[in-house]
Length: 341
Image 1 (spheres, rainbow, N blue to C red):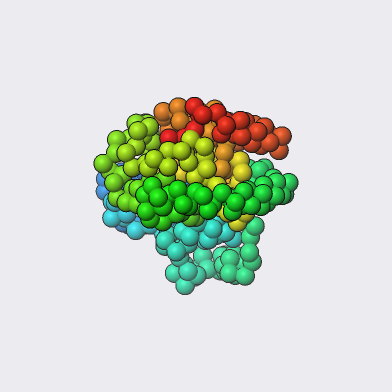
Image 2: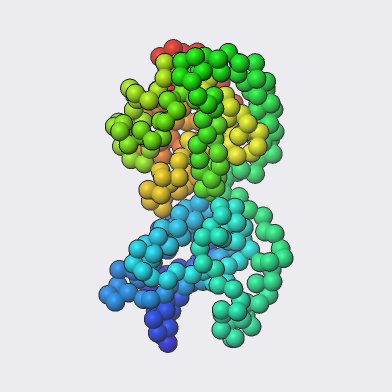
């Protein structure tokens, strides 16, 4: 057996056809880029190893960028036919995997699969993994702000009252214009990439998802938009222009899946195309409004612009800034030329 550090923070140990990668104490955006590169070097080697084991024994913090690097490495290993396993997963890392459901996707070694010597060193950690519930990582101050959550709850309750009042006329208009379901449900990715169901008043034809491939994407990068999307109904254009289609999302805010203000909630297929640094936008909860809605809205034409605006929100965030964006959103809603399309 020989040991060879390919990256300063990610020592690599070779054992026959198996390679063990030791993960650093933190796995945030800077470390995540190095982690992904280390694993890529291994998968591109000729010959490549038969198995890659990721050792998390020292890792006490992992944010969405680290999660993105881990998922990317797992997919690349699968494509190469390389076994990919996690070992010595600490409670902090396991909490993140549990949140996103990746604990059911990524192979995680049980204690019985570790050698006797390693078992003697890690048994206490394994016991902690099964008995202790570790708090989730505080990836951004907004996530831990009780005042922001209080504002979300109050705003969501007021919003749901408004939604209840407007729901009957909106439902009647949708049914007359294009008979079918009143609500549209779609899977989106929230904080740390956790998937949830987002709700809207339906603004497209019933079979819109099946017809998506027939519509040209007019923007660049990992999201989809078409100004003259033929799938949008007549009442749907009005709902989008006035943002009334988004009223049901107050329920997502009340449940804590979203916030009144945050980043744009991406779809799973968008997240699959992310590079490691782009996962940073998932360090905060997605919002009903945010920087990209008030400073770009339908004029945003590239994914890089969305990323820039989302990271700008994270950098500038404070409660006063949230309130400012809420007031700007209200003003935009009443501007006939600024609605979504």
